[in-house]
Amino acid sequence: MSERGRPRIFDRTAALRRAMDVFWAKGYEGASISDLAVAMGINSPSLYAAYGSKEALFLEATDLYSRVEGADIWLALEEAPTARLAIERFLRRTAKAYSQSDRPQGCLITLGALHEDSSRGAICADLRRRRAENLAALKKRLQRGVAEGELPADFDCLAAATFFATVQHGMSIQARDGASRAALMATVAGAMAAWKAMAGTIEA
Image (cartoon, rainbow, N blue to C red; front, side):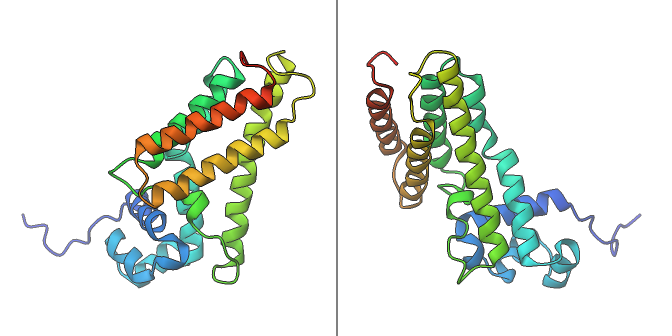
């Protein structure tokens, strides 16, 4: 019997993933409702009915991004046996993730929205919160290195965490501008050379 006329089942998760890709590629301001609706396979009224607003959709999309795209990068901090390896693997995984050719380059959390005068305040506040959480994760791993005796007691964990977070943010911009994976890996090598100076020993 023909199924003609039966409405298609709306896959909310799949549609959210496609919206995430649009925001990732174009940013909050650059992604129009029309862009999002076309990518999600729905019309604008259905988009608002399902998600409430463009702002709410973006917040859901960034939450999805943090769970499915960024997780492997940050797992390196917990999995590596030393702080040095944790930072190196964190940066190397960043380089690989940001330079994949089958998705937008760079990081949605870094590039999604930067200016409150052009984006909704809640959007910028949410991205700042996520970046602050990432900085805190780096600082926590370095503090563990101090506690385990790998790093000197006077090691400035916040300064080092800020440095490596800044390196990651810069890699995001480089990737969006077309930097190759090799170029990003060269940045990782430079950052790890700086690690030696910060740790105060060639062996650390």
